[in-house]
Length: 342
View 1 (tube, rainbow, N blue to C red):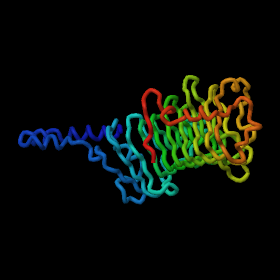
View 2: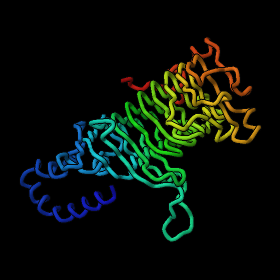
View 3: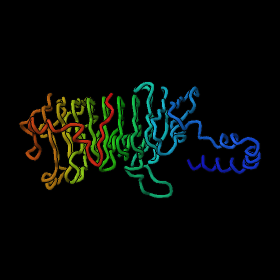
View 4: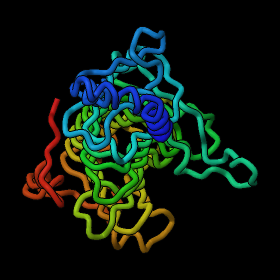
């Protein structure tokens, strides 16, 4: 964005005098010369690694989107592997990034927490490792893979969210530890028909997130979720009609552990595989967390859904309580918002 602004300033200086003279002869010339960007419209932008689109990189397509757009803009990404570390900045709203083919349209990068920062002995830390970071609001991703392809050498985030009203439909999120970081309290995220895999705490953070009809696949004996829901936030992670599966060798997996007190996680109407531990939940080696964690289940099936050995500080919802867990109730916070369902 800054580079584009500098180019515009240079162009303006070179062209001002002839444009001024033209304006004296024909007023329309002046207004046309300073017309909006050719991409400032609701038309679709095409990205293709093979050069058949308007851009070869997704970042370049994001760069031309106008700040705080009041219309819906689609960036269509053709099949290919896009090795890019991307940020959708806070001033970019209302865009949709749509892949041509979920499994073959891949955004990938390979940072991990233990990579040394230049000129220091410190690792880069978890929160700089993202492949894609979304700061803007009202962003949709469809039919695309977001991957952190680093070796298993520490925390490595594929998707880091900070924006509100984010929707993910038929996406894959691939990684090891800390695959999905829902990074800002009070934001609302909706995942539908997505595939998410990882090893440890691979869905973590303070946001309110609804997962509908998703496959959650564990790659190792560890923990699926690590919610850090604030005490005054009524909902955290809700998994509805999801399938919990595992790679071969993963057979002792916890549903979650509380990254912070008051963590909220609910699995309802889900199919829990036999890799889920009978106790279900872990307290992060801190018994005090048992007093505040909001760990809930309702109407789950499968070998991992047995209730008899669940920890005493988790709870099974009643039918009446479960009927109140709706998109409308969960996403009604500072404003009403219901995602556009596929």
